Amino acid sequence: DQQVKQNSPSLSVQEGRISILNCDYTNSMFDYFLWYKKYPAEGPTFLISISSIKDKNEDGRFTVFLNKSAKHLSLHIVPSQPGDSAVYFCAARPQNDYKLSFGAGTTVTVRA
Amino acid sequence: GAGVSQTPSNKVTEKGKYVELRCDPISGHTALYWYRQSLGQGPEFLIYFQGTGAADDSGLPNDRFFAVRPEGSVSTLKIQRTERGDSAVYLCASSPSRGGDYGYTFGSGTRLTVV
Image (tube, rainbow over all chains, first blue to last red; front, side, top):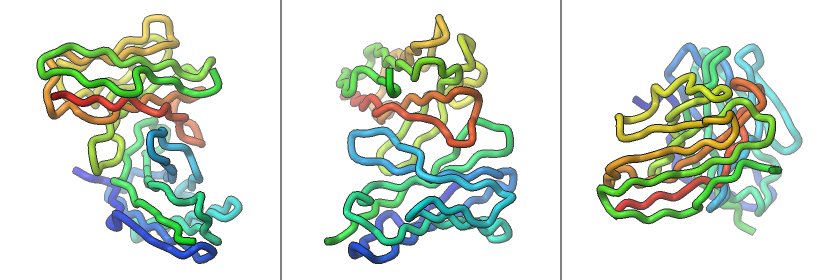
Protein backbone atom coordinates (compact mmCIF):
# COMPACT_ATOMS: atom_id res chain seq x y z
CA ASP A 1 0.00 0.00 0.00
CA GLN A 2 1.64 3.18 -1.23
CA GLN A 3 1.45 5.72 1.60
CA VAL A 4 3.48 8.35 -0.22
CA LYS A 5 2.59 9.18 -3.80
CA GLN A 6 4.33 11.23 -6.42
CA ASN A 7 1.87 11.28 -9.27
CA SER A 8 4.11 12.97 -11.81
CA PRO A 9 6.82 10.58 -12.98
CA SER A 10 8.62 13.30 -14.90
CA LEU A 11 8.95 17.06 -15.21
CA SER A 12 10.74 19.12 -17.85
CA VAL A 13 11.55 22.76 -17.13
CA GLN A 14 13.59 25.45 -18.79
CA GLU A 15 16.74 26.66 -17.07
CA GLY A 16 16.00 29.66 -14.87
CA ARG A 17 12.32 28.82 -14.41
CA ILE A 18 10.63 27.32 -11.38
CA SER A 19 10.33 23.55 -10.85
CA ILE A 20 7.40 22.42 -8.71
CA LEU A 21 7.30 18.83 -7.51
CA ASN A 22 4.27 17.47 -5.74
CA CYS A 23 3.78 14.73 -3.17
CA ASP A 24 0.68 13.37 -1.43
CA TYR A 25 0.50 11.09 1.58
CA THR A 26 -2.21 9.05 3.24
CA ASN A 27 -0.84 8.21 6.70
CA SER A 28 -1.96 10.84 9.22
CA MET A 29 0.76 9.64 11.61
CA PHE A 30 3.47 11.06 9.36
CA ASP A 31 4.93 14.17 10.94
CA TYR A 32 8.33 14.59 9.32
CA PHE A 33 8.86 14.94 5.60
CA LEU A 34 12.01 14.88 3.51
CA TRP A 35 13.06 15.34 -0.08
CA TYR A 36 15.93 13.38 -1.53
CA LYS A 37 17.74 13.91 -4.81
CA LYS A 38 19.27 11.04 -6.76
CA TYR A 39 21.69 11.04 -9.67
CA PRO A 40 22.18 7.90 -11.78
CA ALA A 41 24.38 5.24 -10.15
CA GLU A 42 24.42 7.16 -6.88
CA GLY A 43 22.44 6.81 -3.68
CA PRO A 44 19.76 9.33 -2.72
CA THR A 45 21.12 12.43 -1.00
CA PHE A 46 19.19 14.48 1.52
CA LEU A 47 17.96 17.79 0.15
CA ILE A 48 15.53 19.45 2.54
CA SER A 49 13.04 18.51 5.23
CA ILE A 50 10.06 19.90 7.09
CA SER A 51 8.40 19.10 10.37
CA SER A 52 4.63 18.99 10.65
CA ILE A 53 4.67 21.98 12.99
CA LYS A 54 5.74 24.17 10.07
CA ASP A 55 4.15 24.90 6.73
CA LYS A 56 7.24 26.15 4.93
CA ASN A 57 10.98 25.59 5.03
CA GLU A 58 13.45 27.33 2.78
CA ASP A 59 17.08 26.56 1.99
CA GLY A 60 18.61 28.61 -0.77
CA ARG A 61 16.89 27.80 -4.05
CA PHE A 62 14.81 25.04 -2.45
CA THR A 63 11.56 25.56 -0.57
CA VAL A 64 9.25 22.89 0.76
CA PHE A 65 5.61 23.64 1.52
CA LEU A 66 3.43 21.44 3.70
CA ASN A 67 -0.37 21.43 3.73
CA LYS A 68 -1.32 19.04 6.53
CA SER A 69 -5.06 19.30 6.03
CA ALA A 70 -4.66 18.25 2.40
CA LYS A 71 -1.88 15.75 3.20
CA HIS A 72 0.16 17.38 0.48
CA LEU A 73 3.63 18.77 0.18
CA SER A 74 5.55 20.36 -2.63
CA LEU A 75 9.13 21.21 -3.44
CA HIS A 76 9.91 24.41 -5.31
CA ILE A 77 13.25 24.91 -7.02
CA VAL A 78 13.91 28.42 -8.24
CA PRO A 79 15.73 29.19 -10.40
CA SER A 80 16.19 25.72 -11.90
CA GLN A 81 19.71 24.88 -13.02
CA PRO A 82 21.04 22.08 -15.28
CA GLY A 83 22.64 20.40 -12.27
CA ASP A 84 19.17 19.99 -10.78
CA SER A 85 18.39 17.33 -13.39
CA ALA A 86 17.89 14.22 -11.25
CA VAL A 87 15.24 12.01 -9.67
CA TYR A 88 13.56 13.56 -6.65
CA PHE A 89 12.01 11.39 -3.95
CA CYS A 90 9.53 12.51 -1.37
CA ALA A 91 9.73 10.62 1.94
CA ALA A 92 7.91 10.68 5.25
CA ARG A 93 8.05 9.14 8.70
CA PRO A 94 6.00 9.19 11.89
CA GLN A 95 7.21 11.04 14.97
CA ASN A 96 10.23 9.48 16.67
CA ASP A 97 10.37 6.78 14.03
CA TYR A 98 13.20 5.90 11.71
CA LYS A 99 11.42 4.08 8.89
CA LEU A 100 11.02 6.26 5.85
CA SER A 101 8.22 5.69 3.36
CA PHE A 102 9.21 6.89 -0.09
CA GLY A 103 7.29 7.95 -3.14
CA ALA A 104 8.17 6.52 -6.54
CA GLY A 105 10.12 9.60 -7.56
CA THR A 106 9.87 12.39 -10.14
CA THR A 107 12.53 12.73 -12.82
CA VAL A 108 13.35 16.38 -13.40
CA THR A 109 15.03 17.49 -16.60
CA VAL A 110 16.24 21.08 -16.80
CA ARG A 111 16.57 22.26 -20.41
CA ALA A 112 19.21 24.83 -21.32
CA GLY B 1 35.32 6.48 5.50
CA ALA B 2 33.82 9.69 4.28
CA GLY B 3 30.62 8.10 3.05
CA VAL B 4 28.64 4.88 3.11
CA SER B 5 30.41 2.28 1.01
CA GLN B 6 28.60 -0.64 -0.61
CA THR B 7 30.18 -3.56 -2.40
CA PRO B 8 29.86 -4.91 -4.97
CA SER B 9 28.30 -2.11 -7.01
CA ASN B 10 26.82 -4.68 -9.37
CA LYS B 11 26.08 -8.35 -8.89
CA VAL B 12 24.68 -10.78 -11.44
CA THR B 13 23.73 -14.19 -10.10
CA GLU B 14 21.81 -17.20 -11.26
CA LYS B 15 18.43 -18.06 -9.85
CA GLY B 16 18.79 -20.25 -6.79
CA LYS B 17 22.24 -19.00 -5.81
CA TYR B 18 23.27 -17.36 -2.54
CA VAL B 19 24.52 -13.76 -2.46
CA GLU B 20 26.02 -11.44 0.12
CA LEU B 21 25.90 -7.67 -0.11
CA ARG B 22 28.22 -5.60 2.05
CA CYS B 23 27.74 -2.19 3.63
CA ASP B 24 30.42 -0.12 5.36
CA PRO B 25 28.70 2.79 7.16
CA ILE B 26 30.12 6.15 8.09
CA SER B 27 32.49 5.75 11.02
CA GLY B 28 30.74 6.36 14.32
CA HIS B 29 27.21 5.98 12.95
CA THR B 30 25.37 3.62 15.27
CA ALA B 31 22.23 3.27 13.18
CA LEU B 32 22.30 1.31 9.92
CA TYR B 33 19.45 0.64 7.51
CA TRP B 34 18.89 -1.50 4.45
CA TYR B 35 16.39 -0.48 1.79
CA ARG B 36 15.46 -2.04 -1.53
CA GLN B 37 14.55 -0.08 -4.64
CA SER B 38 12.78 -1.97 -7.38
CA LEU B 39 12.49 -0.57 -10.89
CA GLY B 40 10.17 2.43 -11.06
CA GLN B 41 9.61 2.55 -7.32
CA GLY B 42 11.02 4.39 -4.36
CA PRO B 43 13.20 2.69 -1.75
CA GLU B 44 11.42 0.33 0.63
CA PHE B 45 12.56 -0.39 4.17
CA LEU B 46 14.05 -3.81 4.89
CA ILE B 47 15.86 -3.77 8.23
CA TYR B 48 17.28 -1.42 10.86
CA PHE B 49 20.27 -2.02 13.15
CA GLN B 50 21.08 -0.07 16.27
CA GLY B 51 24.60 -1.14 17.15
CA THR B 52 24.99 -4.87 16.65
CA GLY B 53 21.37 -5.88 17.02
CA ALA B 54 18.63 -5.94 14.43
CA ALA B 55 16.16 -3.63 16.11
CA ASP B 56 13.56 -3.98 13.37
CA ASP B 57 13.55 -6.56 10.58
CA SER B 58 9.88 -6.15 9.74
CA GLY B 59 10.63 -5.15 6.15
CA LEU B 60 12.45 -8.33 5.16
CA PRO B 61 10.17 -9.95 2.56
CA ASN B 62 10.67 -13.56 3.66
CA ASP B 63 13.07 -15.90 5.45
CA ARG B 64 15.42 -16.08 2.48
CA PHE B 65 16.65 -12.65 3.53
CA PHE B 66 18.92 -12.17 6.53
CA ALA B 67 21.27 -9.42 7.67
CA VAL B 68 24.01 -9.20 10.27
CA ARG B 69 26.16 -6.51 11.84
CA PRO B 70 28.38 -8.47 14.22
CA GLU B 71 30.67 -5.70 15.42
CA GLY B 72 28.32 -2.77 15.13
CA SER B 73 29.98 -1.42 12.01
CA VAL B 74 29.99 -3.34 8.71
CA SER B 75 26.75 -5.07 7.78
CA THR B 76 26.07 -7.90 5.36
CA LEU B 77 22.72 -8.58 3.72
CA LYS B 78 22.40 -12.22 2.78
CA ILE B 79 19.91 -13.63 0.29
CA GLN B 80 19.46 -17.37 -0.06
CA ARG B 81 17.96 -19.20 -3.05
CA THR B 82 17.70 -15.99 -5.06
CA GLU B 83 14.68 -15.46 -7.28
CA ARG B 84 14.26 -13.21 -10.30
CA GLY B 85 11.94 -11.01 -8.23
CA ASP B 86 14.85 -10.20 -5.92
CA SER B 87 16.42 -8.13 -8.72
CA ALA B 88 16.65 -4.57 -7.44
CA VAL B 89 19.06 -1.97 -6.12
CA TYR B 90 19.84 -2.64 -2.48
CA LEU B 91 20.63 0.56 -0.61
CA CYS B 92 22.38 0.84 2.72
CA ALA B 93 22.22 3.97 4.85
CA SER B 94 23.56 5.09 8.20
CA SER B 95 22.91 7.87 10.69
CA PRO B 96 24.53 9.03 13.94
CA SER B 97 21.50 7.97 15.89
CA ARG B 98 18.06 6.61 15.26
CA GLY B 99 16.15 8.60 12.66
CA GLY B 100 17.74 12.00 12.79
CA ASP B 101 16.48 15.35 11.61
CA TYR B 102 18.41 15.14 8.39
CA GLY B 103 17.50 11.65 7.37
CA TYR B 104 20.17 9.20 6.52
CA THR B 105 23.29 9.12 4.40
CA PHE B 106 22.82 6.53 1.67
CA GLY B 107 25.43 4.53 -0.14
CA SER B 108 25.42 4.17 -3.92
CA GLY B 109 23.73 0.80 -3.69
CA THR B 110 24.32 -2.68 -5.06
CA ARG B 111 22.42 -3.49 -8.23
CA LEU B 112 21.45 -7.15 -7.99
CA THR B 113 20.33 -8.95 -11.11
CA VAL B 114 19.06 -12.51 -10.84
CA VAL B 115 19.02 -14.33 -14.17
